[in-house]
Image (cartoon, rainbow, N blue to C red; front, side, top):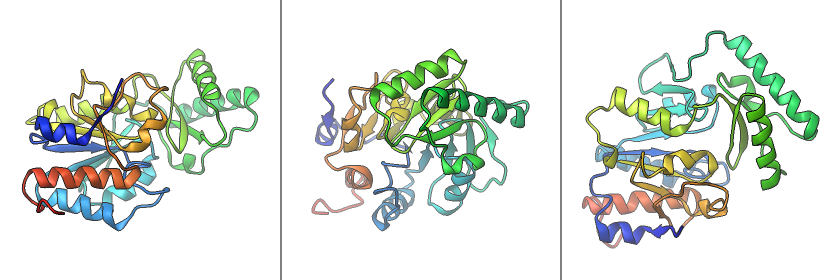
Length: 265
């Protein structure tokens, strides 16, 4: 599948109905793992013109609670769909029902230990202590073949698996970004049509957000090109720049389309 450049979206007028942006975080809003002033400016500019941004990330619940408090966003979904933090709400909403969190974490740990018998060099992620619904380990050093084998092993143990540029995730089946986003949109933004929601991402754990039957308008920042042969669904459009610069490229285009920025910006 050929990913279209953003210029094609401008010609077709595809971005004019955008009323909400659902964006991944790492590798999409960050540069080498760090937030930049330009991204913060873009988020603030979008909020100013009433185009809210909803973060949807694989990061831990504890970590997402913090960014939801500080960034100019309307909310954030953590752990690839497990937990939702709504802006100005102290208590999160569990999108994946868990009767006994301690028992759930114990089962996840057991699966991880089973994986380590096949891949002894797996390293548990530092943020696992702040997680609720999933279990993570570092993706560094794993080949595409390794990742495929890990996915198969997880499924044989009754768990789902995904990965990003940062981590691998052992998670419950049906816990994914698309389903969680659909729930949040239906529950908290019922006035929005799917055609008004723009999804943005950069890696395999964003794949469900690229499903055109669910979200007809999607963009991958340029680094998604590293994974096009590893995912089934691809974004409709791709930026010319990677990571945070790709998101800023997209934000600038949207702001121009609604005449907030001059053409020469």
